[in-house]
Image (cartoon, rainbow, N blue to C red; front, side, top):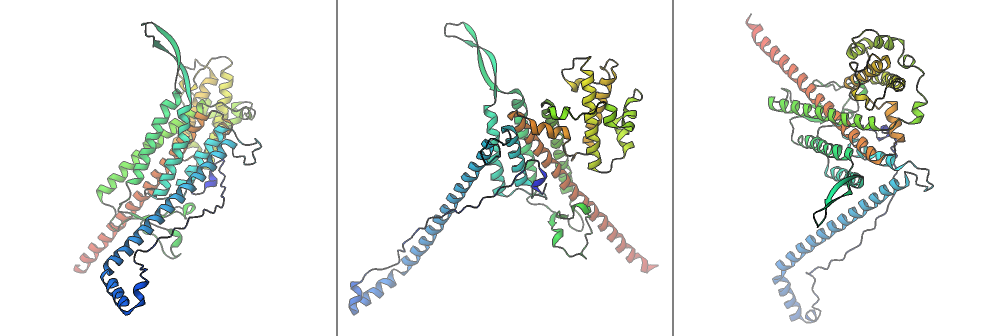
Length: 459
């Protein structure tokens, strides 16, 4: 997440602006303009006496002048920041209206894709450089809340009509059409906002912690870590450090509790995201690329395992495949998902299925295509559980790219960035717990060596 280019549709445009600040002149109250007193010795003497008498008042006036100048400078800076923020908001809404086509020629993306990209890019801007357990800076938190409020406010105007019974003054009733928030938004948006509040609360709770971070890039090549060893593919991330004796038991329990909480939030956000994606229409461009048969899509080995026997275990199949990287897992997910839709299309020729999530092997009525489609869906779910940080499949990417429903675009992108943030928090806590475990093991080893060195001379 550190690199914003990892998000699809992210375009970083920067524009140079010159914001002029007004100049203020503040007069000093300590200046004297008694010209006639300086014309005679008595006048000069009176002037010296007057200046001596008002010296405390002059110093007080100077202090008040400096305070006034400071307040004026703060007001100017706040006004300049408000103007800059207003210009940035105008620029973002212009991109949304133009579909990210700044030429205005109408060749940009649809509004749904533009809003999805805006939420994704905002997450990359605010959380893309966050690699440690700490609260957001006030500037980033303000930027996130302000812009997310603007983007989510669109959902307030996405409504559906429903008939209601309205009473007349004479006591009779009649049916009228009333508007209400769309059912998917009414159900999912408050839940996502609650998950966001919980995640930000977890980060805010780490302001005063027993652990700290050190930037590995600033260390010498000969310096090694005793309490933590990071994978080579993440050498640029800051490393957590703990005291030599490790964390206290209360802090360790608190970390474990917050990890479990973030893990549950990750699962809930992932479930909402999967539900929204399942409701999106499958693009015609993806259907045209489907293989002719499911066997061609999965391959002989996976197809033979899925089609043989009455008992199918996706865990055993994944253990047999022995996937070692997310790249291999994503390739298998793409192949299985394509085969699943091939079997579903064939099953639709003989069955009417309204919701595929309810189809299992028990109610498949012996139809081989229904059984294989159900097993493929179970295999996909198991694969995503084993690789929680798995990237989007080809089908998911195509759905997001060709989706035109603005409500679904907001819910999908919102749940996706919360899922990513929850996964990152879990991984950061795991790093701290690993450093704590290694530090305690090293501390126990040192204690044993000290005890052995004290006992050995007596022999």
